[in-house]
Image (cartoon, rainbow, N blue to C red):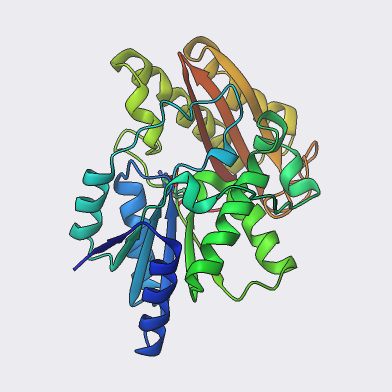
Amino acid sequence: MTRLVHHGDALREACERARARGQRVGVVPTMGALHEGHLQLIDGARRAGADFVVVTVFVNPLQFGPEEDLARYPRTLDADLAACRSRDVDLVFAPDANEMYPDGFATEVRVAGSVTEGLEGAHRPGHFHGVTTVVLKLLLLTCPCLAVFGKKDYQQWRVLSAMVRDLSVPVTLHPHPIVREPDGLALSSRNRYLTPDERQRALSLRRGLLAARELFDRGERDSARLVEAAQSPLAEAVDRIDYVALADPLDLCPAPEITGEQALLAIAAHIGTTRLIDNTVLGEPES
Ligand code: AMP
């Protein structure tokens, strides 16, 4: 039985009762418009040992810039609830903005340094402060043993790991591999914006990542050549590239030279009115 609650107090009480029963609470924060990627995170929470699974559905205005797609972001709560029921989620928390940020809300949680500065941080000023503020609040309402985040938003996972470490938040974060369509497109709530032609063109992100992986696996360690290989399938296919960049997989410092065994290769590009991101860790087997 999946219960739907809209208020923080109800979420807190339900989680307290679960803990009193001896259950381990696991949380999967989302912005809704759930797809198979989100559902695999839910399964991941169970596998990681959660026996009371909470999914939060909240399109967080704090993490959208003024020019971004907050107004048109898909909101499909009925379908999300049905999807959660199909995966035996225990509780769905779907607050409105006023519940999360009542009048007078004035607190911001910021992670500083390399982990927030590059890649998404450079192109979406303030984005990660919005993410860390909402996620810490969700963690404090839920007090979970574990929380699952997707590596689709690789940098987000690293930023949240830094927050949890720095503030000694008593939760274990479980990163989940990127879930893809059979043709390689990373699942995203934003894919529904794509026209059939744009969807075809969106495959270029994956092609770029695979081209660079192949080069890396053959021994190439020159960053410029790896980035060039990743960029070349994008050239004709996308309308604008925000970045194709290599970074340290842990602290996300830019990697003009690859020194370690692994490097994060991350892409953000615009196709029509849709902004897509994807990534891979070179030197790490794909799961
Ligand atoms: P979102 O609703 O886009 O904020 O995503 C909620 C969570 O689902 C985040 O931890 C995302 O990284 C994760 N997620 C979204 N799409 C995917 C995907 N294709 N594969 C793995 N995780 C994903």
